[in-house]
Length: 618
Image (cartoon, rainbow, N blue to C red; front, side):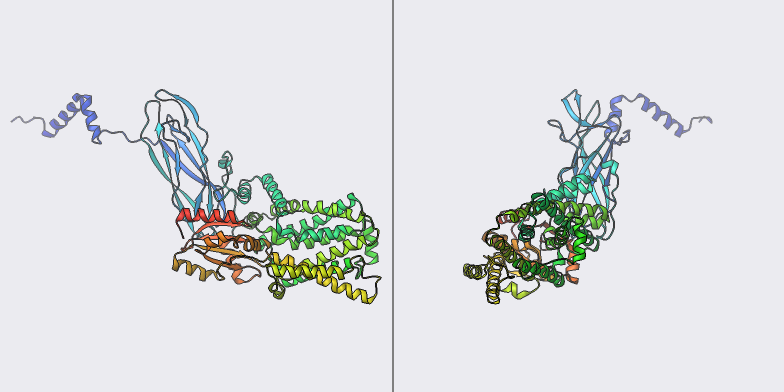
């Protein structure tokens, strides 16, 4: 054996190197099939998620932006994709308490591809927008939103198989008391969001405008909302009051009537603005001020006094010195119009709750009281347009011929209307006035009889001043009967006539029954001062088809007439800024649907059908 022979290990390594050099190419390809000699994969995409706000509160809407970075030399199919291609798509997780709208994809760049012709693609960097809606009963805790991006990457030579990229978007859910700040505004600037996911209502559009920073659009929407609110039954009680104030004005003239009407509306505007900011700052229910007996009593006293002055019992005049001072700035009528406008603003406050739910929530959650004030101001101005028109042309009534007792007839009719409204408001804090009301033909027949007798005895062509004591007594009895008849008719109409639902008046009990019997539950938040709530009872729940559907639900009616610890807790839990609010939940307490304001029987049936189609018969 040679002493200097080559070691066995050296021989092995020489043979391995020679074999690798001399192996044919196809042999290397076979090794690659077994995972050997394979190059590491190239990262073709990265995805990051951003929120439009730093924190999210239960019951709020927000946006998500997904920024996708595409590696150089690669592109992915756009959404929508070309024919036969797989488009880039966001896959949403099934997350409790969170609803997503349709994703907003950017427009793709059309490229000419050799194998398929022209097709829209994405390259470099794209941003995808998503509307999101967090439910009212979402827990206060951080949430990790696990999302996925499905795509098919291609380069100039080949298209790879479709892949799915997972990424996480952290969400911090906080309470209503914490302030919210806009974030990543540059990322969201070029995303054109459509309607929010919850519904196509004006409230959703308003929330989108506010969260998107389009203040001008928000002001326009609340102005239009004010106009629409002025056409609802909720503001009907203000119409006879407005007509009475301006129709009996001694000063004829279109221009002065217009100015008085504007001042009257400014009183409403100032009241709304102050009440709106105060309510949003304290978290109370807008309109609940009308549940305070002292407030209702004060307003009713003013209305009764105004009505008695219409009858000629006495004259409402300011002190001589104050009157002279006011005459130098336009007359006593302007101060009186403004004062009555502030009172009218309090009376109409319950009307505004549903329409202003988003505005009040926005004020409370952002702390932007300045913007909140002007949103309320604009809303009240829109609602006041109707009263400017009524007041302007009601003032022309004083220019009608004054022969005989024509003007006395108008003043007496206005007085009856105003005192009737005082009784109408008092019934919410004085139960006997509410208990006598019925919605039946015999009841309305009695009301009509009292009205006719009252008008016959009421001596409408005369005022109290200047007539004998005997005639004054007869006139007083007649006016009292007429007021009672009108009140019975107006109040009776508001009472439901038809099927009555089997209501439960405790939230905890209702949730327990729903869970025990595995039924859907309907929570109806109402108040005695809420006219739209009564509209729901009178028109919607009394409909036979709606009542038949709701018989299969656990129906819970929660009274918000007066503020208490219970109502405060429910307000915080379900985020109730105004009434009426109706919430549908499953047996586990998960919110399925929520709406504010009045909906008619047909719309309610549509809501119930959608609920049952989505989750099965209750």
